Length: 215
Image (cartoon, rainbow, N blue to C red; front, side, top):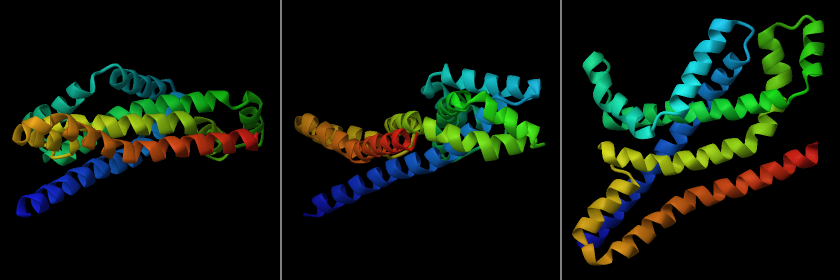
């Protein structure tokens, strides 16, 4: 009975860590990615180049390398983080690049005439972007953004290889202890990921239908 209670508590801790990583990293990535998308369409070339370099570099870099950088490299240059914080930063930076691309695609889908009309009213680039363009762009970008967040949930498993006790790390520990029940353990862990991902997928479908109806 004592072993069951310990394992149940361990399972809950692993699940809550995975959920926390996904939620915190997801929210930060949405903010950072939206800012980067805005910079990518900025009229100032240095800002466009910097945002493009950031986005393209992270989108084409394996997530494991991003984790390795924040866990092992940053301490050597004076920025030491605990494993969970490093994992959150790595997931945020990596995911924000995909968020930026999704939001930028949404921005490009907004009719050029609307931005021109806003400029003719004397709006600055920032006002034009935040008041006129982004609200419309985000509606278009909602389905791909949900897909990015679902991918983020699955990407949290990489944190298990870098000292964070989440679902993947827990599954490794349990399979070492109960080697005869590997399939059952892995199916159980997959079920926990589905508990997070399936509602996100349903939310994406619902929002997509709402956006289509609004149009």
